[in-house]
Image (cartoon, rainbow, N blue to C red):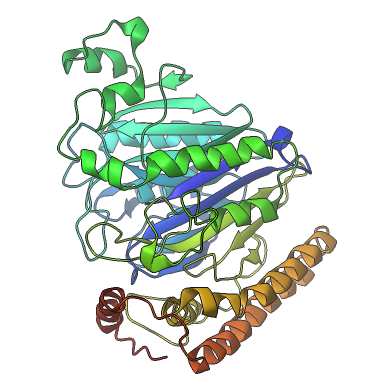
Length: 453
């Protein structure tokens, strides 16, 4: 489960576009930060995506991605032209194909082939209708779904929602957020040509003038499908209105720090009471795994993309799970990718930054309220210094910005190590429930990760 949100220049404090996303996936499904340069290919080249092979284009754009380690596609990313995309799993009344392009494949293809947000909508929908979407989107557990996308550049943004090969797109006016349910009604600006005729053939009983994409294709309305449990239990019916309400309440003054704060939120159902992941719910924006059946996902990577009017872009990425505990670090498309250790996999590697963050996360979960409070103030101070220095270096030379990005990642790794040691040495004031700890022990065992303290 995921959340993606965007604020256009009219809604931000500095006239930039901000897009933020939490990527929620399985707890051992490490997510890698990857950079791929612009590339040229011969006319007959092909491309192997996660499950299927398609023709390659003659030239692809440079991209910076946050990608689940095992798949070709990505959960979120930005390209050299300042196009940024986040996707969401959505559950519809239509059957998901056994194979095809995954939503993550479509996201990466959109970034590699489009130089504007509008063009990315065209690229993704053309590929969708040509090759279809499908395939297992889960890592160790099967999960089949359709996809929605939030696509932005520094001037505009689009919400694109799909059901099999049918789609509708709506231009964002000021702010928008998407989660794991369809949101577009009859107000779409673009749509697949056969959208309404296809719906009528499938039993849509209203007239074309009353057509609403979400009402027709959602798995919970008007006639629930067997998959309605996914939309209802995903928490999206709480999370999406909550994030949208936050954006609207702060419109005109939104900053990078505000978007980070939203991604760290455990609300709205936790507001006014002490939060612990063991007793949380799927309504949390920052998601923590609790069990294999109901709350099987956690936030495994987070992004805030800052697209300025002058065309410069800064990507703030955690490269770790649990943004409520981790640090956002600055990344640039025109500088070398900082050293974050070996590319993480589903097996614990203490040298990989993602797993360093995960070791802290899992140690903190044993007594979340006490242990998180021991280091988050320092985390906030370090991150504030990153944000302030990034403003100063905005127009600096490539080498200086590259050194800054690398230095932030080194400082973050050092902080993670120190916090992990300190947390592990703490006595447990209020232990998490035994069954919760046992479920996490199984995850640790599957990852080859011993966890004490």
